[in-house]
Each structure stands twice: as C-alpha cells, then as structure tokens.
Amino acid sequence: MTGARRHTEPLDVHLIALRYGETGPEVLLSRRAGDVYAAGCWHLVSGHLDGPWEDMITALVRETREEAGIVVDPADVRAAVTVHHRSPAGGARIGVFFEVKRWDGIPQVMEHQVCDAMEWFALDNLPEPMVAYCRAGLDAYRAGARMAVHFQKPGDPIAYEPAVDRLVLVPGPGNPGAVPPEVRAFAEQAVGRITDWTDVSWARAESRVWKADGAEGGTWYVKIHQNDRFHRREVTALRGWVPGLGPAAPRLVAADPTQRAVVLTAVGGRSLHGAVHSPEQQRLVFHHIGQLAAAIHTSAPSRPAAGPLPLEKLDRHLNAARPHLAPGDEEFIRVTAKTASTLPAAPDVVPTHGDFQPRNLRWDTATGSLYVIDFERAEWGLAVRDFVRLSDTWHGRPDLLQAVMDGYGRPFTPEEEAQLTILSVLDSVSGISYGAAHGDPELVERGLRALARLRAAQRP
Image 1 (cartoon, rainbow, N blue to C red):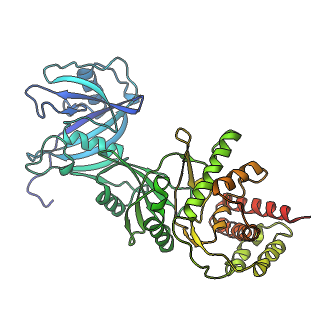
Image 2 (image 1 turned 90 degrees about the vertical axis):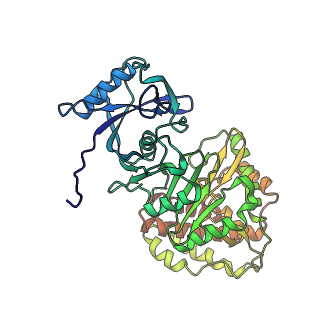
C-alpha cells in the first residue's frame, strides 16, 4: 500500500431497463428533482446497498420496486458494466450497472419528492441534461465494455458535456472483436467520441472492420488493412478517383499508415451477397452495376497499358491449387494462359475496383441506389478486370448480361472477351490457392465452379 488512506468507496446499483420501440432499443430514465444531487438531470433508476447484509441483485430489485413500481425477478438480471467514478467534488464510488428486459408492472414515478418524471428514451438519442456518471455507464454499455473508469476533475459539470467526457473504457481479455486502444484513439480523434463498436469483419483472420456509431450521431466504418499494399491501394483510390463516384462510394475521413487504418463514411443499402430479388429487380440491379462500372472506369483519364496480361504468378498459384483441381483442369489453365501471347497489344488501362463482386456491392431497394465498398484491391488495369468476379453471377442468365452491358453503355469487344476468359482463369487459380492456404472453402469452391464453367464454354 503506497497511499495514506485505503479506499472506502460506496457501491451503487443502476438499472438499465430496456424495451424495443419503433426505432430500436429504448432505456428507462427518471428526472431528479427537489433537494437532491443533480436536480433537473436525467438518470437511471439507481440506489445504494442498504448495508453489508444486502447483495447487489437484492438491492437492484428493491430500488427498482421503490422508485419505478415494477417487480423484477432476480433471475432476469444481467450484468452490464462496472464503472469506477469520481465526482467533480472528489468523492469516488463504484457503480454496477445491470441490464433487465423483463418485469411485472408499468414503470411510474413512486418517489415524487426526489423525481418528477420517468420516460423511455432511444438508447442512441439520450436526453439532456443527463448526469455525466450515468451517461458514462450507458456509453460504456453501448460500446460493449464490461468495465470503465470515469474520474471527473474539479470544476467539471455534473451534467454530461461532450467537451469534458472523462470516460475511459477498460478492454476485456481475449475478445477477438475488441478494438485495439490505438485504433480507437485514432478513430475518435477523427470523428469524436464513439459509443458503439460492432465487429463486421468477414470470417477471415486478416480482415478487421468495425461499424462505429458516434456519441452525438453519425456512423462510420473503421478498417485495418491486412498489409501495406492493400492500405496504399485503398487510400490512393479514395483520395484520387473514388470521389468522382459521388454518393455511390464511401469517403475517406482519416488514414494512418503506421496502423494501416482508415476511417470511412457509411453508405446505404444491403449487400448483394446472398440477396434474393425477383427477375425484374435483378435486371434493374445489374443495369445499375453496369452503370457503376462505367463510372469507375471513367473516373480518371485512361493511361497507356504497362505490359501484357499478368502471368508471372501462375506457376506458384498452380502448385498450391493442384491438389484441388479436377482432371484436365491444369491443361486447360495452361492452354488458356498461352493464348495471352496471341492477343493484340493491351488497350489503355483505367481505374478498376479490383474486387467488383456482390459481396462489395450494396443495393437500396427503397431508393433504387447502388453502392460499392472495399477498394483495397483498386489499381489501374484492363476494364474487363472488374467483370471477372461478376461473370459467374450472370452465367445462364443472358438477360442479366444484357442488363449489365446496357448499363455499361457498350458490349465487350472480341479482344475483351478473350481477356475476360484469361483473367477469369487466373483469378480462379489464385482463389483456389489462397482459399486452400487460408482455410477458406468458399474461395476454393468459387474457383472450381468458375473453372468448370469456363471449360464447358470452351468445349465444341
């Protein structure tokens, strides 16, 4: 013990009573009134333990009945977050916040001498003024933390003010979705306090993406790239030609090359990956896909091609993919690759997305708008490069191919048809190789399916 005094903080219990309203989860708050601390401020139903003989759960159930007139079964109480708090006057305490979603009765003001209102508020739109201590507990809860420190300084207001927000979240152990502290600090420096973090990464170890909701409104996406090359590609595209796409693509808010991190604005719609639409709606979506591809390819002036189609990695990818190939696949792959030398000189290159597929396309049915995300494979290349991972989606559906071409404004040239076949074969082998090495059966299956389709198309 290094201090002159031992800590003897009191223990508070706080009720996070939740219900689901028309716009999402709502929390029950009461407004303090009379000759009490923080009169006029909104606060959770809360109170102290009556003595050493009363446990936390018993105290919460009792305080809830006394203040709000509802009965909570102890079995329905769930631990939410613990906050070590110090007030502006210097007094410290431990606040234990509990989540409850079931009870008997209708909440109402029971102690009129210390409370003059009780209402439900959207969890993402809390009222003002609100006790900073209580707001800290709710912000920590919304962020998914299990523990936090909220030490206010002398002169700080009792009511919550964003400019003097003292909340510090304590990360938990072994949580794969936890946001690294340095990434959290980088994002909050860019957009302000973030109260809700949702891990939306794909099911791959290298992918780290979080949806971040701000304390004062607004939603962003925070992404850590798996390598420096992907980080440079996405940042270069987002700073260069992507702004020309308008609202169809996210905007870069901040980038940190040291952490390979970016903060991006959110776009609308839902992913086309796994989406089900009527045939008529599909044709509309694919028409928009063609229009968006044209917008990408004309977002900057074209450049002279740097050289022939890329074949330098074929042998390496084939070695890894070979155990998964069907009889005749390797011969087909090598024969197709050789045709690259017979093609005319490559045309000019244009900005390409590089991973233009349903997973990275979002469709808003209400507005009929299409959005594209994930530019970490963006680079200058042949225009048909962006149709490689889409060609599987229109297989057997000439109406969808026609919708794409109508939206794009022109059909493929014969040279582009040949380039598309070669690039599709190379992409299939690369996908099988990567999927096999990284335990991603979806990539392996997609590559094998594409190879089977391409071989069938080449047969007399």
